[in-house]
Image 1 (cartoon, rainbow, N blue to C red):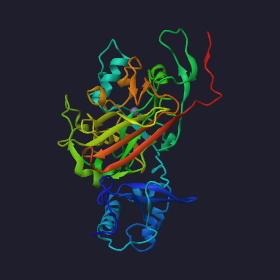
Image 2 (image 1 turned 180 degrees about the vertical axis):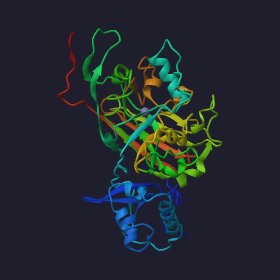
Image 3 (image 1 turned 90 degrees about the vertical axis):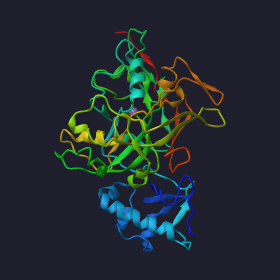
Image 4 (image 1 turned 90 degrees about the horizontal axis):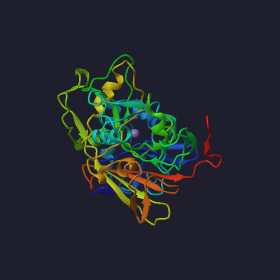
Length: 411
Ligand code: MN
């Protein structure tokens, strides 16, 4: 019998990494175990860990640990597993209550790329944004489509999300206007946290796993009215860059490995540099819950899985390094919105409400898009609804800046 108790959400062999605030200016690496967090600095101080330097653990980001590379991650994980699975004596000061711990944003991402890898989502959006054309553009099945996001606006779970202002144009109006977004939305996504590669040395699909530290929940908040007006010809910009929330826990690839499944077949076969004999996705049960402002509880509005993504993380990594660009430790890539085929399986409100035309009722409140005071909670469970947890990725909408006034001017 071990001293630490695992739970279904955080069993002893799961051990996702996070960063917690131990005191002012004292961010530390921790892992989640049951209802507690294990302070890895305290573990190092008591001689329980010696595979990595204490200073790598006493930092407010996982980046220094990630930068040590796969052999060091494996050594640390083996030490941790050995400890949590066999520790028989309670050791004071090593753990803290998980619910009351202040968890910080776990990485400082040098670069952030958001992909568009769910064929169901891309098809749904294509139909709405280009009703007269083919839903999938000609390149979609050949290239993992993506755009560079704004890494500086990645925030920790729980950070309030201020409603963005921006330029929009109502299709029925002759001129654009400026003001608070009226179509604030979510995007349910799975992120991968990366390990560096060499410049001008593309990472192959087969080697890509060597460059993934772990998986994290991502909510790519999106202002659909800003996005619709700005996105052609160069893609998303201010409709996305105001905030991206990531979950508190980064699940090590070695913990997620058990939950891989074959990815759907690709047709046509991609070019050689994107092709591989084995294409695997992670089977993660994903949910979105919404607590409307004024409601006394949250209601699950979406249940889906990452098992069906068309493009895998390995293909995305091979693609994004194929031009000679390198990866930095702590880079974040995200899958793109994850949607299934049914209404209750889509990862955004624009799909669920058909761009606001058909509002849904959530906990007794009607919603087309997000209102001020609404709270969104993403959750991920590996392998199914009762599997190990990725924690919760939460954000509450706060009102647009008070100085923001709507402006419309005739040319
Ligand atoms: Mn996105």
